[in-house]
Amino acid sequence: MTQPTRDPQAYGRVAVLYGGISAEREISLKSGQAVLTALQGAGVDAFGLDVGTDVLRRLADERIDRAFVVLHGRGGEDGSMQGLLECARIPYTGSGILASSLAMDKLRTKQVWQTLGLPTPAHAALASEEDCHAAAETLGFPLIVKPAHEGSSIGMAKVGGIAELIAAWRAASAYDSQVLVEQWIQGPEFTIAMLGGRMLPVIGLGTPHSFYDYDAKYLAADTQYRIPCGLEAAREEELQALCARACEAVGVRGWGRVDVMQDAEGRFWLLEVNTVPGMTDHSLVPMAAGAAGLDFQQLVLEILEDSLVERN
Image: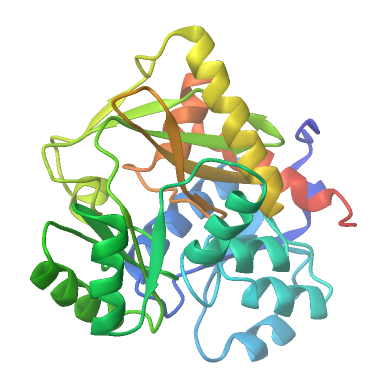
């Protein structure tokens, strides 16, 4: 892990890229404002850039030394912005083009994990009612339906029968042409943040909702965050090691977050990896960093520090 510089001028002029045009725009605006406030409070010459259709002109007109990417979802977290920044030769935070694109695609991420023998729930892709019937026969119920390229639990639904499955597939299709369905894992949920190549303390999640949905993530006051997570030390280390392998398989760098379920037999199941996790007051990476002894400003500076390291 590189040590954050103590001289804020070493970063030059930093553009905090946030907002965007994805379904996660509102969350990105909140994340970006929090990051911008922290950077400016540390003395960094940072400014906010709400990414819209004029982003090419803005990047060309502004004198930018590096970019802090806080764009959630498509258009910012999927490799497209990373490619644009590389073409413009602007260093940036977080994962590169390939890892960003791969992690944004839940289906292909799971296929990579399966190939490497990493545990992830059985699943299928849905493109028609016939696919729904086939998935129901193969996977059984309950199931969870997800748009393959969305985050923040947008478009997700737990289903217990074929009629619900078809309805959930149609609803998810409004967000994404590719829809994923996977076996429901009944048990506790955990999330594990990666920062500078090390895994932060595991957070256990609890919610009275049927799953950790958008409302539980960003709006509800009754969501539970457990740090310590409730696992024995050896099991927590096992989970951190599994998530480190999951990040390495996808090529995640700088920072990220892995979501995991544990079944009734105690087995861990990888759900997805996020390459630009939320940075709001409800967000999990700042919580995990706090448990590791880093305040929000220190966390943001360490993420920014990675943009000083030359990419391979």
